[in-house]
Amino acid sequence: MTSSEKKEVEANEYNPFEHRQVEKPNSDIRTLANLVKASLGSGLLAIPLAFSNSGWGLGLIGTAVIALVCTHSAHIFVEISQACCRAERKPILSYSETCEAAFSNGPKSARRIAGAARIFAEFALLCTYLGVACIFTVLIADSVKQLLDTYAPAYIMRVEYYCLILLIPLCVLVQIRHLKFLAPLSLVANILLIITFAICLYYIFKDGFTVADKKVVGNPARFPAFLSTVIFAMEGIGVVMPIANQMKNPQRFLGCPGVLSIAMTLVAVLYGSLGVLGYFKYGDVLRGSITLNLPIDDWPAICAKCFIAVSIFLTYPLHYFVVIDLLTKYLQPRVKENYRSIFQVVLRALIVCFCAGVGVALPFLEQIINIVGSLFYSLLGLIIPAIIHSVFHYQNLGKWNWILWKNSLIVIFGSICLVSGCAVTIFDIIDKLNAKTE
Image (cartoon, rainbow, N blue to C red; front, side, top):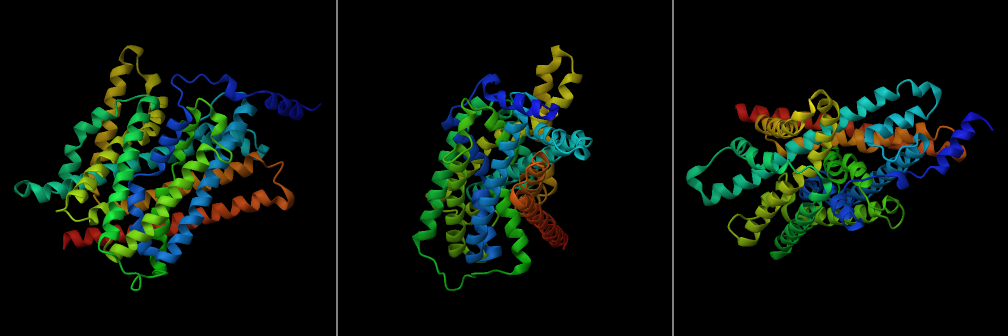
């Protein structure tokens, strides 16, 4: 028996699930709640704006295709992570560790860049979820400002000041350090989001809407903005790995029906329905969140604006978990053990301040969503999973190398989304900045 065959036998005998020692494991229901909340949020309510860019017909088809591709990419990434756990004989691997392990167990030419692959993945994760935190800050600030501008007109302030005011409550909330304790918050946030979704549907159907004047296919030049928004809304790959690794029964995460497939099916249905109906109702005047289009003088709409702000507020620490996990890994070992608790408090507060600072500098909700979706989520959720899947299975790419061809198409699709989405968004930001200075 050759050394490679021996290693393969040993890997097949090793079951990582039996060796996992998770301090506070999550049940299937809690895992589903966290996973749905990771994919739902500001993205759900931004979907109607995406449909105004694509047209309702192309939007429905595009949403279904992107949902399928994103779910497949998340599935193959978790599958590779579990295979790498067996190959490396380790119980748990993070997103970046999976990238390193896939290259380490790939062809010889790829093994020497395994460390670089891990560092690149960690940098992409950090930038992505810092961007998400910035989006959440601006969205909460926009919702609060709209309410207070109406009911406290004597104290009208710019949205930048609301970003600064949010610093205190956000700094307190991010001190929660275990996913187990975030699950109840995610459940409450999901409930509030569903109620907000129902209220949006109420206003959509309240006075009816017209379909005849709505575009089936929108302006092709705006289609990259649609792709960016939907990918941002649909993707949660950075949170998928921590959530999957914290499961009490991780073998139930994949499969059909598995936690991942159930969560993504629910997400896709919600996105498609609200996207097309919201576009039918409000057309081309849609804003970054559909709740901002609701009337400001009707109590259900007021509740919706409050609920979405609270829902996003409760979701903030779940995405923040990825950022703090990465920074703690590199910074905490340099801190004396006696000061590590204080270090955690200060670090978490500083990151909140950084995200609020970005919100103050660029309070453009739609454009921040598009840049994060096109640049970072295309990279994390589409391009990287397809690459490591091909690298890890380099010895068995299927008949006629169909795995390689399939993954190549995903990489090409992700690259198109990345380049075109970034280009359109940068021009949009320049236009907005020029408009502010005029």
